[in-house]
Image (tube, rainbow, N blue to C red):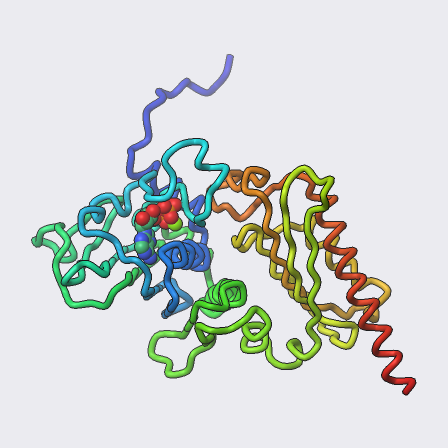
Length: 358
Ligand code: ADP
Ligand code: MG
């Protein structure tokens, strides 16, 4: 007989369930930032300012000039599965927004102190609200949890403080604020390049210099120049590809990538699928292969690739972080993109040889 006595099964406390679920979505400050940036972009912001203290662990603040949130919606703002972006299952196949699950702010409120100041264009004043565990909470002990009127500009300011204060193991695992800040910068840089008509500013609290600063009237190419510098920008080539007449669904690709003259020690690969920054080891491998035989061994290129695919053919619902995306005809589409990049590289190489000869 077993030496272990059966133990009674009991239901976990709601707050513990929520805290565990939140940890699946928000692993580190950069995850929280990505969600908050996507919310700001969903709200139509043209200006987004990010401030971080201790790599975002102490403080992460995002100021946007988007639509703002109506006073009446504030009670549900941080409640789980509450969203303004999705109503029916069929909406899932035609999503135009980043968000849809209504989980981001809820998750953040379970593992951090969440404060919001927001004003719509029609409001005569801004509203300030604090959240804890999905609910409106008093900003100070002994005061009411109701949103308070205050002064403020149109748009929304979200402040996340003391991330993982109630999950000490997670906090301890994130040892290096400078590493966390580097990841924050990486997210901001990606979105700044992909949204060149939105001005991004990112800095550390107390610093006078911005680590990312882009204007609101750029192009993908000018944003790459602003962020990665002229050494990348002067070698940029552009390639496009799209669905053929025989293909079963619509798709389009735009790539900006460095020529054979550019040699970096580490590869840079920025991938966007339907405007979402995602990762795909398979797409990366296939696209980076265009440089084999063109670049010397050990040298790498810079590649920005934006794929627009009929949303009904893309499954963004694989994981709550929406980081992993699957789409139909992945191999065929990727191959066509790589082919068009290869053709541009070859043409560029020929004109180069021609220049040297004359
Ligand atoms: P989702 O984006 O999936 O809807 P979130 O938890 O990220 O879920 O946000 C919940 C809701 O809060 C959104 O649907 C939106 O209505 C509102 N919201 C969040 N951030 C902003 C913002 N920066 N500006 C305007 N509305 C926002
Ligand atoms: Mg969201």
